[in-house]
Length: 350
Image 1 (cartoon, rainbow, N blue to C red):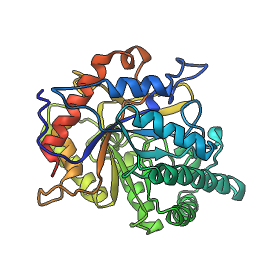
Image 2: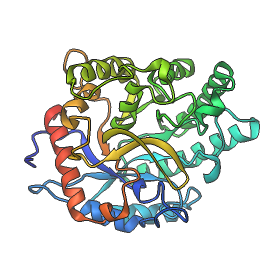
Image 3: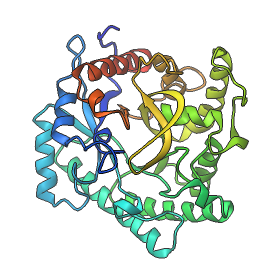
């Protein structure tokens, strides 16, 4: 895979949260932020490297309650590795200090509080010049099972919470992205995501974060068989059928997409540690991967006429819940970076 870079945009970022998500006492130990930054900064393909990182605002990487000076020191650590900062994941879940977006008034207030804290950190990083693109990432922080007890009522509550979060984001000059996954209630299918975004109705502030691994499972109807786009008996020797399913989904959600994760998936689910089962991320060249990553990325990055949407200034690789042994190998990030360059070469712009 050639590393020759044919386009300047979008910038290429690596997610730092795979060092944290699914790690802990009941799994593998976390990988510290400096190690994740070094693995990212040291990756190179034919002289091309990653441009930046996306961050999870949670200990032990970045405290959501970090002081201004601590955030500035964080910026110095990242800048010292010639990397920028992009999107930030707000810790909106109950175990991380947040609350369900469809919970009681106190829980929903905790959700909005975590968004406010994330926006504050985002503004500091903008002010010191290290962050020029990206969003604040959120989800419903609730399970599909809980949501299913009152689908209409719970979606209405989530929409109201998201609107309150939008008010906060706008006051900081930030945008939000709701990441749909099969494990988040009210966001567990492509149709439910579209319904929620339309109910919130703040397209300038709230968009959709599309992850290629998670959204592949939407086509298969995990946790929402009524919304599946591929038959239950689907065989993976029919690439045209897969393409049609992906086109249906991306045609609906692409206009809302303001943040994009490049990823591979083998059409299975995985949970690790405290993280519920969701789309299993694979290495880009995994022989069991179902996506032609560089080609299928274009379903999100190009409009129906084939023109790049230029809807996001950077794209991010997400290798969530990779084993530590995989992440600690420098060759892993060379392979990932090569795929990211291929995506930019195929669908980027100058």
